[in-house]
Length: 314
Image (cartoon, rainbow, N blue to C red; front, side, top):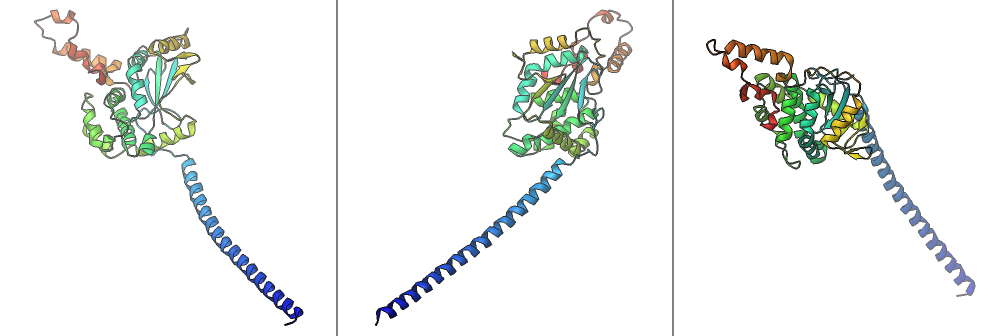
C-alpha cells in the first residue's frame, strides 16, 4: 500500500473518531440539558410552593373571634391591670416556654403588685411558636385556654396556674385539652361548662394563630420579650440587669409625677375588682350572726381572702 493510501485511511479514521467524539459530546450535553431542565422545573415548583406558602403567611389574618376584653387594633392583646395606669408593660410569652416560667416565678409577685397598685397595665401577647420547633399542640391549646379564662374573667389566676404547673418543654401533655381543664380546677369558679366547651371546642384557635402571626412579624425572636413603655427591659435595661427591685424602680421612675390608675381590669381575677370586693363585704354582712357583734371588728379569716391570691401560691 502506498504512503498516500495509508495517509488517506488514517485521515478517514481520525475524521470518524472525531465525529464519534463530537456525537458523544452532543449526547452528553443533551442529557445534561434534560437533567438541568428537570431540576429547574422542580426548583420552579418548589419556589412556587414556597412563594404561595409565604404569601399565605404574609396575608393579614383577622381572628374569627376574640376573647372578651382583648385590646389593640386587632384585639390580639390580653390586658391585665389598671386600664388607665401611667405605664405599660408588654410581655410576649409562650405557655410552653421554660424561660417564661423562670421569668414568671421571679417577677410575678412584683408585677402583680405593680398592677394592683395602679402603676402598670400588662399587655400579654400569648404566642405559640414552640409547637413549631418542638412539635405538638400544647402551646396553641394553652393559649386558647388562656383566652377562655379571659372570657371568664380569670385570666390572671389561670395564667399563674399554668406557669406554676408548666411541663418540661420536650413533653406535651397539654396536647390533651383535658389536662388544661384539670388545671382550671385550681382557679375557683373557672371550671364551668362554658369554659370546658371553649377549651374543647378550640373557640379561639383563629385568634391564637393571629397572635402568633403578629409575633412573627414583630421582629422579636424569643420569649419572654418584655418592654416597659416600648423599651426592652429583659434581660437588661441599659447597663442594668433586670431584677424585681430594678423593675419596680424603673416603673416608679417612668411614673414620676403621673396619676396612678384605678386597679381594676376585666382581665384580672374577679376577686380583685371593686364589684367583687363589694359583693364579698355584702355577703359577710348578710351572714354575720346577729348575736355576735365581735367578729365584725376582727380581721377576715384566711379563707375569706383566698380568692384574691394567685392560685400558684397556694
